[in-house]
Each structure stands twice: as C-alpha cells, then as structure tokens.
Length: 200
Ligand code: SF4
Ligand code: SF4
Image: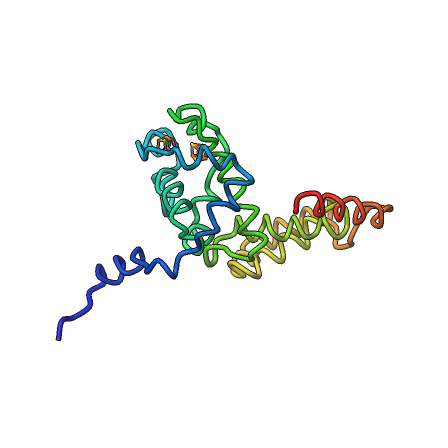
C-alpha cells in the first residue's frame, strides 16, 4: 500500500472537487470590491512582488485573487493573509489591471468576521471581531475587557506575562474594569440597523 506522506496531505489541501467550491464567493466579494475588475486579473504576480508582507502570508495577494475567483472560500477566510495585510495600497497602485486589491482584503475581513472564520490562535481577527462587537453594542470599547477576552482566546499565558504592567496602568487610571458605553445606545443601534438594511 502506498504511504501517504506529509507533502501528499499538503497537496490534498489545495485540490478540491468543483462541488466543494463556493461559486457565489466571487460575486459576494466582487460586489464589495469592484467585481468586474477582479475577473480581469492576469495573475502576473506584481501585487505579491510589491507586498512587503507577502513573505509571511499563508497565500500571497496574487494567490488570494485566484482563490477568490475559483471559490476557495473556506481557505481564504481562514488564512492569515487578510489579517496581515497592512493596507499600504502598494499592490493596488502597481496592479496593471487597476484591481483594488486592498479593498478586496477589506471585503474579505468583513466576510470573515460575519462568518466567524479565522486562523486558529491568531490574535488579530479575534481582536477585530471583539472590538467590532463591543463598539456595536456599547458605542465604544473597553480596553480591559477587550484585552482579557483576546488573551483568553489566544494565549492565556500572556495574561500572566503582562499582569504587572496591567496593574500599573490600572492604578494610574489608564485601564477601567467598567463598561463605559455611550448614552444614546438606542440611537446607535437604530443607525446601525439602517446601515445594515441599506447594505443588503
Ligand atoms: S497585480 Fe493585479 S493583475 Fe497582477 S496578479 Fe495581482 S491582481 Fe492580478
Ligand atoms: S495593501 Fe496589503 S496586500 Fe497590498 S501590498 Fe499592502 S500589505 Fe500587501
């Protein structure tokens, strides 16, 4: 019997049957980030060459565009690429097809938050998600609660490492344990609901 090697498993991760792909993914992302242009990508790789962070990304920007077009929704939304993107706009400026790659990254971040997808143990999407939910609920965020949640969900040991500094900040009045929401939360919710409706 042929033994399945680690490299076979890696290859399997990239091979999918057409029925496993999400053909609606391109439309969704395209609607939020200039879809027709997305289809004109010639896979030249200029975006990946320009990107200062592509070396650390699961998939380079060029690859992300190809995967969005092909319907690799799960892989794209769970990759660290969209969260490592620093929004420097280098790729967008250099793309010969004028594809707004930075906007594609933003659209993917929004979609990942809505779907609750993120790379395991990676703090940035969890921070963005919790920040978004706190502001939505209270109108502003509470740093102490935000940091506690993020540490507990990613690396609880870091809590111990930073406990001393947190105490110092607390006694200087820079960290608060209390939820300091805005007064007109109802108006905020109404406003956000209207925005949601207009986007759908
Ligand atoms: S630079 Fe533009 S055309 Fe070239 S691979 Fe990137 S997105 Fe596609
Ligand atoms: S905007 Fe993001 S993907 Fe594009 S070059 Fe900058 S860091 Fe890379």
